[in-house]
Length: 166
Image (cartoon, rainbow, N blue to C red; front, side, top):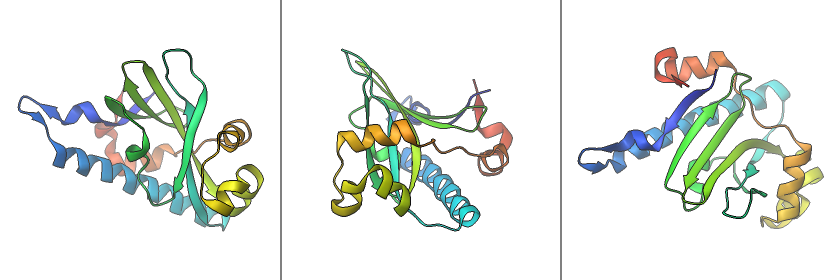
């Protein structure tokens, strides 16, 4: 069953947009993500350098692969482009998907933890110059597996009740 961890529409009330509450919810999601990164690093005895936000981009003329690579400490919710609202889902298998909804469609992005070795194999230009290139984004999408969260961590961080099942 899919769980919604974050929904930007939860921060719109009768008096409009509650920016401070939105920022708090967004930072809480990033804290959760940093905990996932920490667990991954401990389990695999490696260092995550970057985070890939990669998936299908919702455009009026199709859904090509797109995304970007950011520093591991940055909040991916701040890199979803010009969208109307954002939600974060965790699928039953633990896959985390960030959806950015807008008038042309929905960006459906997964997160990829990128170590030096993974960057060397899939995004060497980014590793050397810190610039995103479409071919490297596509290689990440095709060759790497997206980040998954264990149910115990999701429930421990968000609580069983707070993560809304859909």
